[in-house]
Length: 339
Image (cartoon, rainbow, N blue to C red; front, side, top):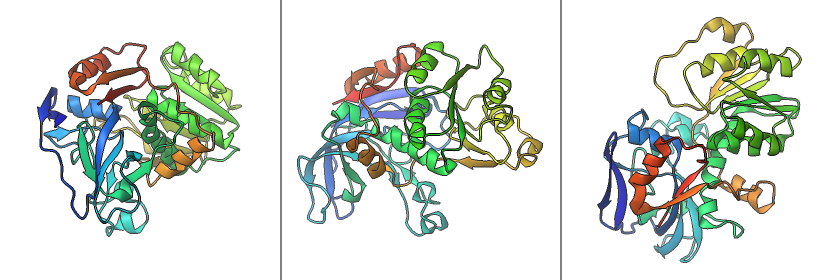
């Protein structure tokens, strides 16, 4: 079967590999139909994702059809359309015992530490499969996984209706966050980006205010929009040099700063900006069993995932797709591979 493998940073190949077989653990065979390109996939391709190991079949936004089930599979049947949880955990370390397998001490993420979904077939445990809502196409269903990341981030932020929320970055992750944040009915939602077109789209989709960080001082403007206090929750969905300190400076006393980036590059920070306002700085990684939460929101009509995909490529054109991502074409929102 065909698969897309990153041999080493900046070297991508479409390879032939053996079709997986079922066993007692991986008791469901999935024929892949769609898989999204995430910013972390691009990071693995370019060697900037510190978590990745090589060579690796990447892809963690994985949708397909159940092709075969083993005798121990109870959750799904042949023909079911499913999306696959990317997290595998040991179940016994401190994080797992605390109910946080997404940061398991022995964490293995499909498409990062073990092979992922950029291949024609994959075998997984039935427990990691979730039924795709009928109202979504396979390509649209890819957006379930990024939305779980947003749900996780909002959970870590402990959002309340009294909050003023600022989201830094209006790309695929930032707009997924906007979809979920607005469900909490916060007092204000402020989106920050450098692209006016993206910011205008955010205003149409629930943001109350926008800041173009190329044209305005984000900290000063954020304070101005919140009557001098600052946002009570700031989520950094962009992770550029200086964004963490900016988030801490902008956030008001007793607020929460949520970090989502994976950069290992040194950056500036000081303790005073955190201690003086007693900020809670919290990381948010992957998702903690949030797939069914998102699927329920879709089925209840509370989240609309249609219209999010800007481009599709056949899996054989993986190199063209990643080259297109690198072009930074302003039309790019979400790119999905089809099989």
